[in-house]
Amino acid sequence: MISQILAVTMMNLRSMPDRIGSSLVIVIGTAGVVGVLLSVLAMTNGLADMITNTGSGERVLVLREGATFEGASFIPLNETQLVLTTPGIARSAEGKPRASVEVVTSVNQHRRRDNSTVGVAVRGVDETGLQIRPDISLVAGRMFQPGLREVIVGDLASQEFKGLEVGDQLTMRNLDWDVVGTFTSGDSLESGIITHATTMMAAFEQTNANSVVVVLEDGVTVDAFEASLTDNTTLLMDVIDEERYYERAAGNLSDLMFVVTNVVAAIMAAGALFGALNTMYTAVSARGV
Image 1: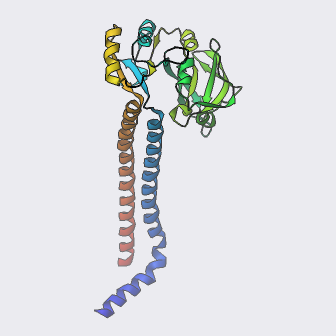
Image 2: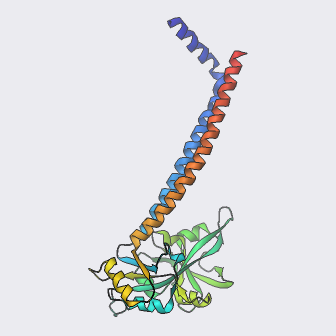
Image 3: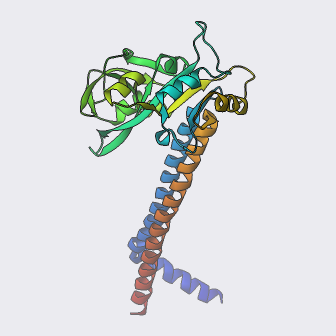
């Protein structure tokens, strides 16, 4: 028995130089599948964390009833004014409501690394919209001025896309907009562009906002504010706090990427398996000869 074990062991050891290439193919193929799976999962988790970190517990979003994201929500401007007068909204030292009427869209820009065209989020806010987001901080240039076609660009977007540095111009709806500043925020807003909402709606000939972002008074719950809003407006609105809104968005993204990642990994794993089987079959056939 021992002699047979030694004989088989020696035979395998002597054939190792002949099997180095085929073995490396199997190892590299398997490592490639694992590496791709881990990298995609890491990217997905990182993106989901960034989206989740965008939300703040003190801010809530007012959307058209049934809209699951801002882009699908349309609120007439006269209704947004009614939202701003709803009881329960916190007030600034000047007595103004701490709320921002906002619009969202996207503009196509070219990536630096491969020149591919990708949509970049553009958010229109008013002066209060910046005040209720204290994490937004300019790192270059200046703030945009209301009434002028000017934008500030997130630092991540400026690094990833061409034509988004201070002094550049970008085109939105066949109009040129000046990039006057770069900002950081530590969340997903840093991957987009911000401008003045009223200027943006006038340039786009738009009469609807997408959302109203509100800071509630201490002690006022989301449900209580939604009840007051229902009594104060003619349209049906949904109210959701930012943390839940962005958690839902991150969850939808994670679910989608989970499916895509596993499909890609399954295809690559099948390819690696068939490659390994083919290599092993070839090795066994060579021994038979």
